[in-house]
Picture 1 (cartoon, rainbow, N blue to C red):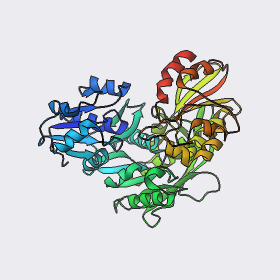
Picture 2: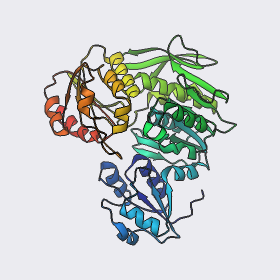
Picture 3: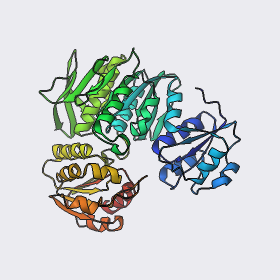
Length: 452
């Protein structure tokens, strides 16, 4: 690893990807400190682990916290505004500043990296892959894009293993910094059009990413993905009539277990039980089976690990199950992901009423997919829309949750976060979903407390 620094300073340390890097450097004995705009449960945990964090822009005073120029590396994310006073001071003081993706690329270059790319499904699939491998003799290291319920962390260090599992993020073309041995590509649906401008440009970025795969490795491509077909690859998908190398069939719920049958290029396996329900989790499991088999891990080891996989925080996370109400929290923020989420709920719970609280993420994404969001959310019986979470963006005229609501056919209202709980209190039975990638997660504990 060509990062010879005794101090690492993170701007935006509370981000899920940044926090994994911070934990990594802290665990290998390097002094770590950082700034974040908001105190969260994750930043509080980092502090407990010995990392110094503050929550105000210190400007030039940050020089008192970081080491000298020669011994300190500054790590940032693309979301950090160029107007931030700390960043301006560090730039003017000639500190070495690298993006998170570049640092991740440098670290993982020393491993056989198994990466998971795709506009949705990355986090659950990479976490499932890490869980499966860690349950076998192969073991693995991992930088994850979510908090694994099995590890209770987004970092896994296993010094004996040559394997490194990472999430390959397409935002800002970050995944081009990686040198994967093998990769799963779950989807290339249009997204991040504020960066890529067109779906064609986005798909080309995935093509370029796939070309980074080692000649000794393999690409594992979802049936919908049409890139790098000239490279060594396997395809996967769910359905009776699709032509793929790894096929999931006969998805069903039996005795409370979500299961499927799997046809591989060489065998047919019945009754594979998944620890997590959902069509998307069945697809994720197929990709993990395929990739694991390419590195010599057989289904006899994979099968029990899939059963014991408990998922990722905020990915189809079962928060409350009582006699009348089931409450699930999910990170879905793209129409395709919402479609799969609601289709999975219907598959499992059939005619039970579905109540969705959705917080759109980004004005640009809402603008690009306004009609698609409306159609996907219409699958619910009733929807509460919260105001759009802006993240790094300024408002776009005419792009609001009210505008989205007018395109929908199902029962819908637009509410501020403080009124959502009052509305949910009126629900006597059914499935409640909180959905979105912004700060809607702050409602999870209050809703949980109300329902228990």
